[in-house]
Amino acid sequence: GAGVSQSPSNKVTEKGKDVELRCDPISGHTALYWYRQSLGQGLEFLIYFQGNSAPDKSGLPSDRFSAERTGGSVSTLTIQRTQQEDSAVYLCASSLDPGNSGNTIYFGEGSWLTVV
Amino acid sequence: GENVGLHLPTLSVQEGDNSIINCAYSNSASDYFIWYKQESGKGPQFIIDIRSNMDKRQGQRVTVLLNKTVKHLSLQIAATQPGDSAVYFCAENAISGTYKYIFGTGTRLKVLA
Picture 1: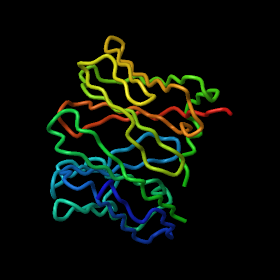
Picture 2: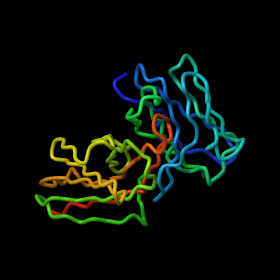
Picture 3: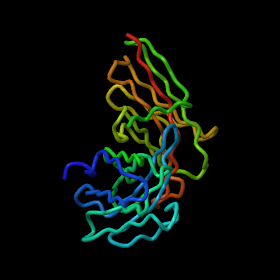
């Protein structure tokens, strides 16, 4: 697609429920990133995909968080047993191969998650 | 869902004036930098980028200046318009040729009519 597409754009869920957030990157972008943004905070790195593999999952806050990417394209971020502290904007981004310096990261509009 | 940014520094500028937003970056080895604009309720939008082999780069109404000596980046917006109101933040490619970026927390720009 023309840009990074994320769904749902807004999600309100009850504490303890599981949620799935979807990201469709820019066509041809091999690298995909998930970030989290809380109120007044900078972007918190969660996970990076190169193709379908995730060489860096170091930013995932706990084992309740997982992500996968299939077909080198769409990615899903899953949060199990959601907690109130999970409330944030989850931003997906994509870029060409970051092995070439200067590849711009393009962001989607985010999935705004509220856990009540 | 709004990026309220209660503790973000704020720059208030009169409509039509020029705006200068600053960013201090952390890694002297960073070789690529990006400015993003984030409007309320939206994702970050790419504005302009610059590589470390340049000191200045101009776009449409925007100019980015890079001072590697003091690790400082600035974004200049000419003839600021109400639509420029947003949070602006910089990003540095902390390890060249990798996916590792460091993002600033941002500055809120308010355009006064």
